[in-house]
Length: 305
Ligand code: GLU
Image 1 (cartoon, protein in one colour):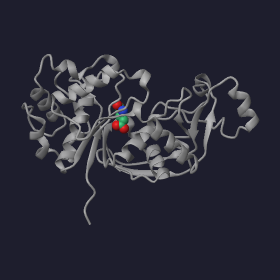
Image 2: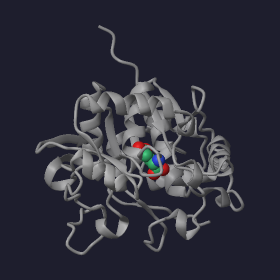
Image 3: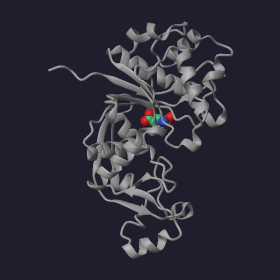
């Protein structure tokens, strides 16, 4: 029996500039797929088109290209995939309860609502059992979001970097949003549908999304999609220990003002422990050196933008 082809991907949200940590994630996703003879694809997660200008996406694609990271397939744009998300929502609604939620932001963030470790809230199911008449009444004033109900079930998976993870969906995640009240499909749904459609077999992304993974596995199971291997990479810090962040203006593109593409790749590879010295390199030279076991639990970058 032939082994399934390896397909890796990098899926940035172009809500701002990509920082060096995002570039490092793209590099690891690329190296991992290529080191296994696989394909690498880029998907632009602009499902929330209002927050994601085309110019930011093009900027990310240019920055990736500048260091030799290209997609082996045409780039996928989530803003063009609403029909696929709609179809998945329809299928999900035949397999689990999806219900409208009319709660306001203020209601959801009231002090008595339990918080999740990722900063989200444990939805108290306020709207889960509304009658048709109650829904009709609320609908006059509020456009609802749509939530999927989760079972009292523990989802377990082993992350290639962070190790074994378990989460009880009912207690540690709660019924979560599939479609927002403005009609935009949630990241959780879009990511699962798109990874499934592209046959993605390995996912590299920041460790800030580790906590979201069990709910994505839940959706994969409902949709009959395989679960890829996950590699959640530690958030990248600068030399003073500050976490890089788009909102603080960290920008991978700006690094090119002071460093060459080869220097940047050399520094990223050194920070991720792929090489043992920060020597300039072309990305493809690193393919034979890559191994997931090398990726450290903390990543510190020496160069600044
Ligand atoms: N779009 C997300 C981000 O830019 C990554 C999502 C994913 O890789 O699943 O942080």
